[in-house]
Image (cartoon, rainbow, N blue to C red):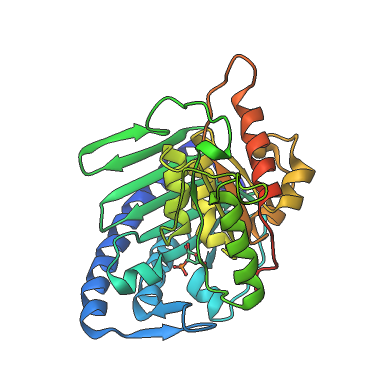
Length: 326
Ligand code: LIP
């Protein structure tokens, strides 16, 4: 097999391999949770709210060595090896992009919204994603052009995403939004972020231009936010400061579920008229550190679902402020 020529059979094999790997990693994450809640060995990265544990590293090592055994020619980008200084260039080669434990803060608190996120980038485009929450035994997965699915403990048969027929979404005021507090708690970021939250949730009768969305949620895992938007339970998820390993798998699953996925306000405006899978600038999107995704929306007699997605993302970006991710 030439390294840049994966066949449909290779992709099917890769998907099965990655789902099995996610479940094995999930066992280790569950074991780690018991240990962490007893011993509480938690380290800090850039500050006291940017956490890492020995289990993040152990899970990444397991995943990396299993990938190397089965797919020795593939490249690997992982949160913990990147933190340790590795900077693999993104080439045309198939590249696994992995967050071993997404939701580390939840993990150390025993809050069960934690997952492993395994994405595959091929010819610089995310093409496969598997996200597994071992505490709730929920697995989302998607393969470019083949749809997205969730496997739940209540229904071992994969359920296609979104879970229900897409509904219309007329405006932000009807939306349930996913946002995160992130790890940059500087005054300038917190001021912009909280002003954005106020404009999204506040009452427009008293707060200028506020949208009074149904509500705002912070789940603590970027990957699970993508899963929730893909299944149609969250209408929008927006975050500044994530990394490719947080979003790579989620991007594929969300796109396959009919979501509209894009980056910063500037990225959105300059790519507004392209259908996301046609993006020529995947690198810019994946490494852009600013991400937004909106769920599949039904067509109405006056507007196509795709146009509604773009209109509402435009409206969202007119309501919030942005900042540079550090
Ligand atoms: C975290 C995310 C979380 C986000 C943080 C961080 P980690 O990933 O998924 O939603 O707010 O900025 O990126 O560090 O738990 O793998």
